[in-house]
Image 1 (cartoon, one colour):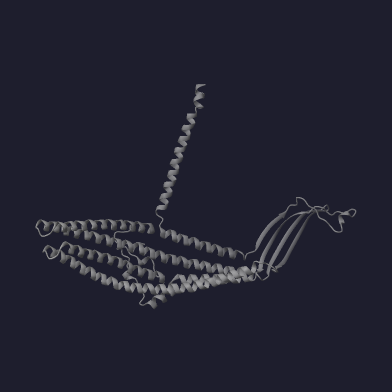
Image 2: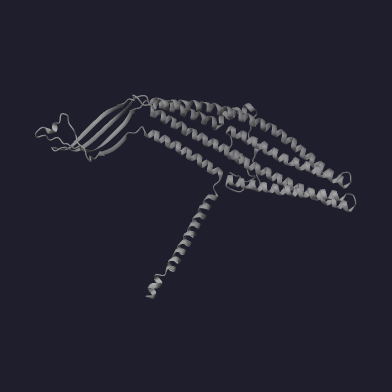
Length: 447
């Protein structure tokens, strides 16, 4: 009896439940960890290319669906009579010795139908589906160009932020030297306490700017890793200077029209819309089907057990009134007109964009040259100012202002180089000429 009581003890059930719950949590945690590991290596680049692959597969499936309409259709069916009757007028079932049944007979049969003519509706639908497949291919190429431009942006942003951080660190080192000089000159009686305090304040300000630049660089590294799926190497070279750029704005527009996938995609979409118009117009024409039928009817009368019917026939259907046909055609025409406008807008956007990016590149290239000269002069001025301050010819305020001019010039140069190279990559992306070879990582090939 004691053993039976122990077996029925509810605490044992609670222990079992807790054990099962613990095991369930462990398994769920393992599954979650496995899923997390699976998703770690997925990058924005691969995800967006994968989405385009899905769109291409959908377009190819629609093409197969429209082509399948060309094949014959085989159907099997049966009618099982639950209740009912057959009425005759005059009522021949009342004739003496009549053998006519009063129940509707059950039947089973097969039917094969093959559409011979449908006003070319299905043929135009197939052509429209083919154009959509071609459009999705061009859309995928355009997506890759956009992704390449984004990849360049991530790399150039990282290069710029590294240059800004390096400039800030050099400024801290220079200001630390100036602070040390000011303290020594204070000891020698050549500088006041307020000058030393201003040098110390400027040093702390530059340290704060360095910390800010460091955080910005960390964010750029994270964005690079998220987009590409791997960490950025220590040395990056986007090879913008090696890219083959057009010689003029007109050349840029011509190459964009020849190579950009956007005008081609717009043309395919317009063609698909035109075929849809023809398909909607074909709904007004008659349809002709070749039909083969076999039907077996059971117990049509007390004297007959089964009746087999065979038929090969042409079936024609002509729409006399269908209120949906004209609105469908009008809608297809409006969509075709919209696609025509979209194509013109795309051509204008691509050619104008190519010209604008070319002009931006030319202007920014010249600006970078001037900023490089400014950095050289500011570097000379800072070194001279520091020596002249030691000689008592200038105050620490003059040196601080000179160093501010230098760091401003260096960071402006980093921004201008980023804008110049981005305009080059935007230009090549607009022309559809970017590929993996447009990027280098020092001696390491990144992609």
